[in-house]
Image 1 (cartoon, helix red, strand yellow):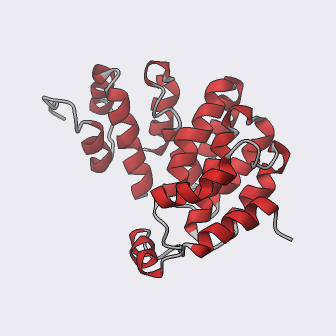
Image 2 (cartoon, one colour):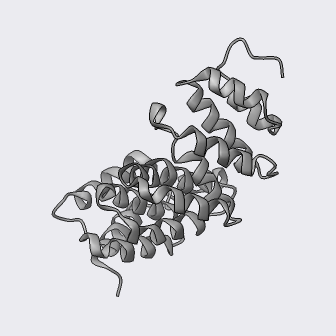
Image 3 (cartoon, one colour):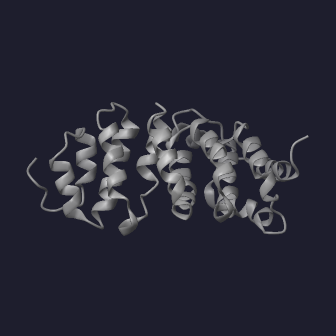
Length: 228
């Protein structure tokens, strides 16, 4: 039998399904996922009563609930799962990394991976920095594009706390990738860090042979642009 939390969320979402809205939502994500057709604002309204502290599942049951949501076809349930994990983000530790890896590598697309990387992994690694070296090395070596993208993006909001040696090393390891989502992530991460240290980003880009997409994204807000 499904977990109580899963049943109640599914019931609330099913009652408010909108097939007409589901079609363009499915199209936006390249026809890869089914949708109830519930837009984010409405979805959060429906979730809100069940996201209160006294209605949340206990931390020990969160992996079960998240995986149950992840195994369902409707994408809104994966969004709900991520927001459930965010409720517990300051309680995540090493034993939850397999769950994060599962979510990153299962039903993978930018809409889930980027939220996990920049909110969940980001907070976990910032609060438990001893995890950064072993897991970023593992993910970079995994051959999985989405784990690799997560390494590039988890520091996106770190600003002056960014470990530039790790960021630049990760980019160096992945800069030959032909994958759009890796090239785009490289550019995005560099563009974001350029808000903190534009000269470091310009120097890095000038001394690397990055994909044109990565270079263009990295230097988008730097003016004047350097001659490359």
